[in-house]
Length: 173
Image 1 (cartoon, rainbow, N blue to C red):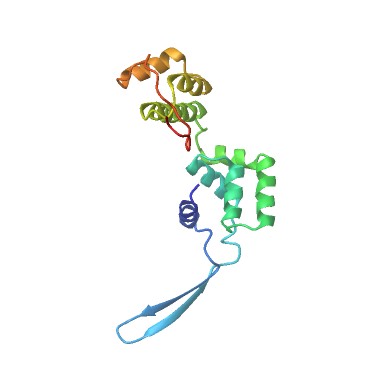
Image 2 (image 1 turned 120 degrees about the horizontal axis):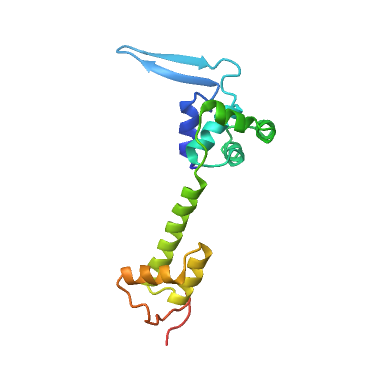
């Protein structure tokens, strides 16, 4: 959850702004200093705000709470209040009330699997890892050695070729 993205999201909800604002307005002849103050309690972040934030970024409600605290948008006391409300099931209740769809964990796992395997294939292509190491890495995301070999072939690499792998800082002979 990037800091600026979280701030913008909270601002769009009308939250997270300073309670007192000042601006200088210029017309053609002079400037006028304008001061405004938010009504008491309007900036207070609620559990339903956290639910929307977490959903928007695809994060857990508790991680959204901690991110708000880290960004200084809520106090330690507010963090505790929001975490208690979430623990009591209020976050889940608000998800249902707001009609937010349940997270598609399978889709997220598949996206991670594709990215993880893609990085492994790129490392193989750059000769940073061997086929055997790629097979070990692929096994972590439940990709079979046959599927790895299919991917290697699709890259146009020789499945049986030995790749010289060295560690960073290791001297090559």
